[in-house]
Length: 318
View 1 (tube, rainbow, N blue to C red):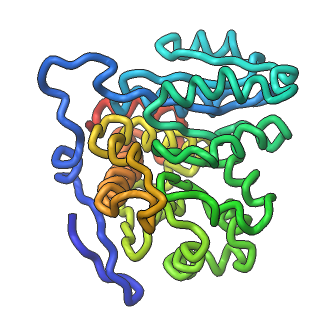
View 2 (spheres, rainbow, N blue to C red; view 1 turned 180 degrees about the vertical axis):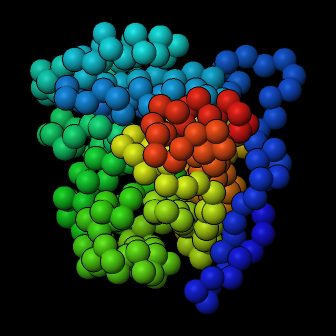
């Protein structure tokens, strides 16, 4: 890691050698339970690709077990595409009297070490119920992406203020515009640091503000990502990144145990060292995601990369 000075600001940035330095140790007598359990709440009756992309990347980055929670309409397709995963399916009627939330979803959350919610879930009332149910979770990392962010952006002004430091938000510029409301996309793009500092007045967790040069932020800590290229400018790339973040965090027992020790007496709810370690690993996930595109274009055109290729390239990066 090194410090780069840009636009009168000092950023931390990762380099190629940081990948091996920061990746978890897989030596010794371990099993699939040793490398983390990830719950991915993704997809809807109209969309199933987001669930597949997030899950395959969580597995490719090294997670031991991945469970997909998605609409029953996706059952045949998702089981065919990723038979390695575990599954929890729901129908619209399962949400009557919140039965699904209190039973199946609650058990899946309890099972998981890390939860990712949002890719392709839409903004239906059932999706809103799942997102709002998750916002009360304090004892594990929760990654909110895509439609989960859009749902919270539609709520009152306290939606992000009420989230604790175990939450990791992964907006692109348009989603960030909905979250902060008082900035245009051009204003966000021109001064991402200022916008993040403004947002931090209402949010105490980690934000991954995605752009050509993604910034990862917690408090006064800013990582500037310098990997990647235009090959990543395709639908589904963000779903892959969310899966990589979830799958990577799940492999660090010290982070997981740290988030289990939530205390209201602590200003952030958790020891600051745990959050600092987490932002470093989130930044590593962003860096690795970019490196998949850098590796891809060594033998292919930037025009031709698909989101599914990110999972394939992960094999060559780590």
